Image (cartoon, each protein chain N blue to C red):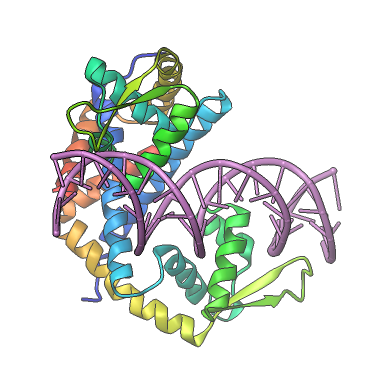
Length: 144
Length: 144
DNA sequence: GAAGATTGAGAACTCAATCTTC
DNA sequence: GAAGATTGAGTTCTCAATCTTC
């Protein structure tokens, strides 16, 4: 197999460029406001959703599609900044439970409007609803 | 601005996941054949297209959307593997000209079928032409 | 032995500073 | 002073090895 249609190559290239472009926009927006990178937001969001039960690192791993060591090191840094807490897990002594802190909640709430504004500018204002619907449908097929 | 439609959030999340999924597939396929990572292929492809004139690093920078220091270090490693050559530029003594080597050509030609097969499996077999057309059109709007 | 989590060592990335030539 | 390219120092990422508990 050495042949690939030009159309498929275009699909891949456009997908790569678009992702790169949007991710850059988000990261730069956060940086310009002296806020943590997007990866931290993802963690804080999941922890805030998890509520009083907190989350196990391996659950975070699945939700965020990060490797195990990635979680360990990311959680480490976020904890050192005071935005989350690690607690030993009573029912499974191998494990931990992670909780968002007050401070973490505040940062998360500061990050959201920046994040949202960027996506609004770069996606919502450029595609109407029906185009977004189609985009989601097509991308979903690629994930199957 | 703190509101963002669920649809737009879905668009962004799907885009991220799809990109992640496809990129992983390509990188793993290359790794499993003991071939260099995708970034090397991009460089080698551009150099092979450039032909006898070679390419200036800053041109590569623009084509690949990499920062200047990224190019320097990437080119460094590829040169050490013997897949490209740096030459001082006669007409602009600040600059260089990069050329692909014989060996580089061979590796590039080994990489292509792996790369192509992965994209074929993960894109071409999952979307028909009209869907790909629409995908490209919509993504193009996001890049404007 | 497998699952949850961490860690050491090496590779890659990032930022700002640097050097040379324009 | 700006453009082309590189580099030092610090940070982050990756792989495999490790430790503890299941």
